[in-house]
Amino acid sequence: MDRGKTSLTLSCIGAGRAGKTLCRLFAEQQSELEISIGQIINRSRVSAAEAVAFIGQGRAEEDFENLSPANIWLIATPDNTISAVSESLAASGVLRKGDSVFHCSGSLSSEILSTASDTAYRASVHPIHSFANPENSVHHFSGSACAIEGDQQASAILTELFTGIGGNCFALNPDKKALYHAATVMASNNLVSLLSLSQQLLEATGVQTEGGDNILQSLAENSLNNYFNSDGVAALTGPISRGDNKTIEAHLESLKAHPDWQRVYASLGEIAVGLAAQQGYTSNEQLDTISNLLNPVNKSTN
Ligand SMILES: NC(=O)c1ccc[n+]([C@@H]2O[C@H](COP(=O)([O-])OP(=O)(O)OC[C@H]3O[C@@H](n4cnc5c(N)ncnc54)[C@H](OP(=O)(O)O)[C@@H]3O)[C@@H](O)[C@H]2O)c1
Image (cartoon, rainbow, N blue to C red; front, side, top):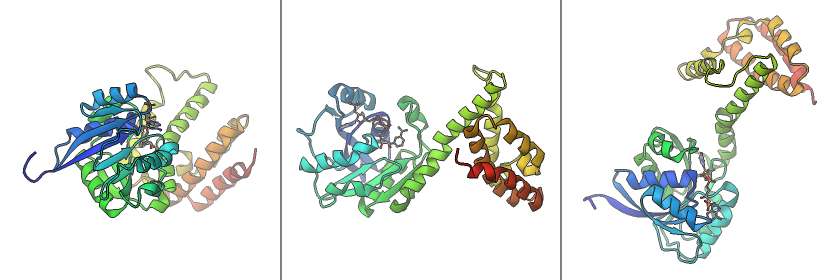
């Protein structure tokens, strides 16, 4: 160990896509914290052994019978199992005063780790990163934002740990986690849903969008670039920004046969009306006319 380095052991329950990627990054990071990976506990020993091979450190386990102490416990099982897993961890008696236990859920706070509270410190760290491909994530995690909340002692050590692997850590109010997670879902999962809907609309016109030349790609990439390289408001172009109410009327008419598509169009259109009002390219009267077209669709129930 280098002079001045703090040496800690981290064990992981649930070394799937997120867990095994983070463990490998922790093991390889070169900060003042020297992390050695202790036990890796998955549902199956085969899966735990695969994770150990990926991480390059650790001992594979499949139950809570033979747990050894660790300074930090990462619970990276699916969200709906975190509470029960933390209870099993606490019941095993392996937790010592001063150890830290954390999970990576975006929507749950550290308070669900309730059974560990009287011995260990609790926190949650949500990396805003998709771990769909762990090998890619090892190389591209750096620069990801990480939302942290929990006990001060656990938050401090985890901030140091995640900063060491290139995370941009920020503090989150635990009471707002569900709303915060809804925001990240809108920018990621719902963005995918929106692009898929856009593709369905094109296909309904007979235009083929599959394959290497998806004609929506450069349009969507331009919009994302414009959004993130401006104050956001300036990125809005199109008929609502210009106040072209007749165009909106034609769009709504063309979507009449698909009320579900029409509703998505109208509710996102209302948000665009708000942005267009901030831009000021068109008059408030024009924007009111557009709102009057969109409102009935937004208020419809079927
Ligand atoms: N994936 C992402 O992009 C991402 C991003 C941010 C945050 N997160 C958070 O990270 C956490 C894990 O998500 P994930 O996508 O990595 O999940 P995942 O790939 O499905 O992996 C879950 C792992 O948990 C293990 N497991 C399940 N139940 C268990 C139990 N009772 N005891 C021990 N191990 C158990 C599984 O073991 P087996 O392999 O044996 O089945 C598997 O290795 C979640 O809280 C999620 O919200 C994920």
